[in-house]
Image (cartoon, rainbow, N blue to C red):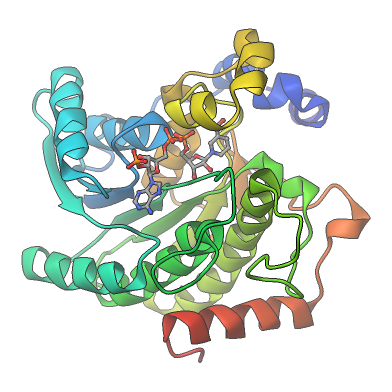
Length: 315
Ligand SMILES: NC(=O)c1ccc[n+]([C@@H]2O[C@H](COP(=O)([O-])OP(=O)(O)OC[C@H]3O[C@@H](n4cnc5c(N)ncnc54)[C@H](OP(=O)(O)O)[C@@H]3O)[C@@H](O)[C@H]2O)c1
């Protein structure tokens, strides 16, 4: 597709983020080789439903061995049963981890280290949009814990396993909703009232995009590429639960989970410059509004806070 038309679709939001954008853009994409991820090991958080399940399926279709990282193993195994029907020869595994619980992330990383020496692909997909302010077991606001702190700690604990890959890729599934929010380092834990779940969600999705860039620099020397992306508007159980009105109004425009998953799967299988924010296989701007631009100081404040909260070495 001509880049100008692609950009115009993006700026309309509804057409670009919805199904029409995907269907028009995909016409110019080449098919990924069916063995693009053969011999690779992949982890996908929140892979028992929606986009995560579709990412796991897409990675398996390209030959990866995929571990579903889920907080309810029974639901993870039910997802595997569905996925095995779609990709019969695939190698799936299920591991329990509540990514919002830093203690559980430590336990999970330890358990994973007993099973595998190398991780090639890590997709941070797990997401929440809570109706009210709740906290993780360590007392962090739940969107921050699920989207930022848990993924940061998991990535850092798995960094040695990622370093053993010839082409490691870490992918944050962010959201176009992050365009509405600046990096709020004055209230990282969202303690000021009134609390809105959609705002907490968008703030932490903005943090994911910044964090992906920071981690991209942190792991550059070990050859681990870190990206963020947004899937567009996708019909998933999460949208049905958290945004029923939006789902009803936007129904004709919503993508399938596989369509929403496409760019994450493509990034896992493709060598592109790290640190970008992607949608429909193209890097996209990180800001449309001047008021959302952050300073280097704000990025550093976020980094120091997250490093301290997770106990990782900030250097
Ligand atoms: N759908 C969209 O239009 C859209 C748009 C932009 C971005 N996204 C992003 O896409 C990702 C997937 O969302 P979705 O729409 O597919 O929603 P979904 O169907 O609700 O999937 C979310 C997944 O995350 C898991 N999860 C939540 N908290 C977790 C935790 N603490 N530990 C482990 N897993 C956890 C859920 O597990 P349970 O089943 O146990 O709850 C579920 O499997 C999210 O990051 C979301 O922000 C979605």
